[in-house]
Image 1: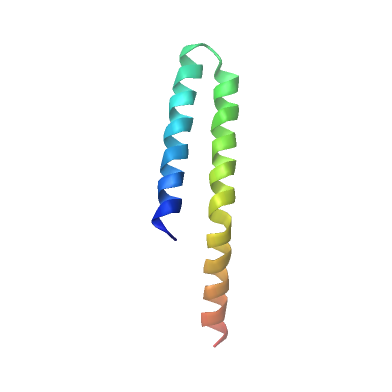
Image 2: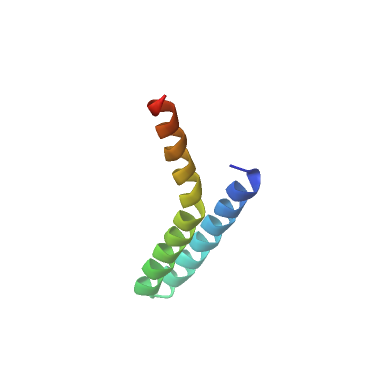
Length: 64
């Protein structure tokens, strides 16, 4: 995993946290939850290929 992906995940996490706090302070808790879930889905989609590669590497090691 490259450092670029880690930085992208950190930036998305910070943006989601700031937007979540702003929406919570404005009384829009429903929208804050939606933003949090959307951020989680975006990060999960970014990490999913790396998880797939990890599992394929593990299966190739176990298969001998």
